[in-house]
Length: 209
Image (tube, rainbow, N blue to C red; front, top):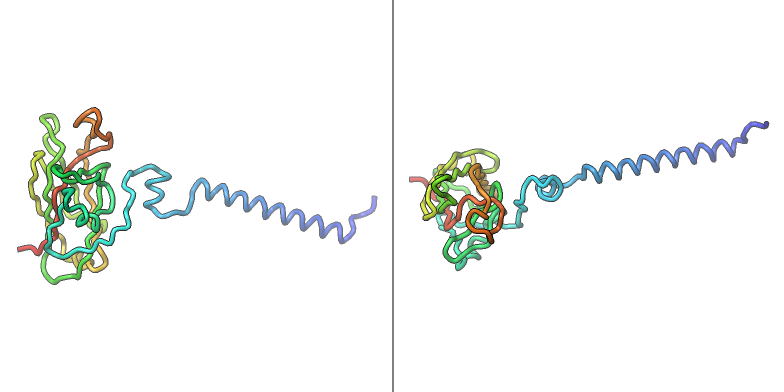
């Protein structure tokens, strides 16, 4: 049997090379399907199903010291700072949280004075579950925990660290985590089953006295 010609060997080498490239491409496609390269918010919401808090493209534009209402009549005011984790506003109840956490965004020129975050809200509570804790963080920095113990609206304030407040020109991402949230069906059989914690009536960032 005669040896393969140089042309035959070159053709065979080319076929092996193309086969290898094709296999590598298929492996890359499979890897991308299993672990797609997407933004963290996209992955958490659509792929890993770790949250139902899909972020809106809100501007966060805010006038320091102004109180933003979360009642239905002033829904346009709240739309600029709502990011995710909120139901549609109600005329009487304000806006209920949904899911394990909610987010707001505030963007305003930095000031050289201490600031505080004021939250006016009621809570999903009863005799068996008398409180709703709200863990507050801004841009990933935990700033404290507040509690609500009645469905009636109450105002709670929490200080914003100076180093965090200094970033307000870029936009402060405020996150509320709800360790005591419970299914909405506890409020009625026809209610949305997603976890609820607080019903937000108003929020403001103020200069601290």
